[in-house]
Image (cartoon, rainbow, N blue to C red; front, top):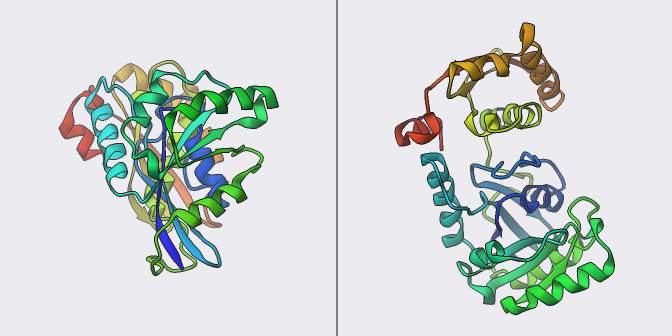
Length: 279
C-alpha cells in the first residue's frame, strides 16, 4: 500500500482544478477561465487497489497586489511544504515562460512530474516542441495529458503511485474530499458569479455560508463597493435567481439556497477582513 500527498502546482489558469476533478473522477474544485479562481487548498482523495493519493489543488502562485493575494500565496507555499510529490502543470497551448520557471524554482524537481496539460487543443508537433522546451527543468518525469478528455491520466496515476512512499491509508476508502458541504456550496455560488460577472468584479467577490437551517444553505455574497451590489443582484434580482437555479442542480435533492448580498468596503485589501471571510 502506498499513500501520500501530491500537489498540483503552477501559475494561475493552467488547468489545475480541471485536472484535480479529472483525476478524482468528480467535481471537487470549481473551474473558471478567469485567473486566480482557486483561493483555498482543495484536497481530493483517490483510492485505488494499491494506493491512496491525496491531490492538493493549490492556488496559482503569483505576484500579490492585495492582502487576499498574499493570503492565497501563503496557502500555495504551505502546500509545497506538505507534499510528497509535485505535479508542475504547464499548458500545452501557451508558451513556456518565466512564470512557469519561477514556480519550478520553488519545487524539488527530483520529486516533480511535469504535467503538460491541454494537449487536446494543440497538434502533436506542438506537444513535442513543448516537451522539448520543458525538458530543461530536470524533472523526474514528463507526462502529456488532457484533463478535459482524460487522455494520459491512467499512466500519470501509475507513475505517481510508484513515487509515493509506502504507508497506510489516512482517510476512509469512501471519502473523496475534506471540503465541508458549507464551503462547497459557497464555492459553487462563487463559480456562477465568476461566469456571470466581468472585469474586476469577480475578484471583489467573496462568498461564505453563514448557516444551514432545515436543509437550506444561507450564503452571504460580499462585495467591496455599493455600486457592485446592484450588479450582483441584477435587474429585478435576475442574477440571484440564476445563481440559485444553477447551484441547486449541484445540491442534494431537497436542499435549498438563500442568498444575501452585503458590502464590506475594500475587504480584499484589509488582512482582518480577509481572515474573517475564511481565507
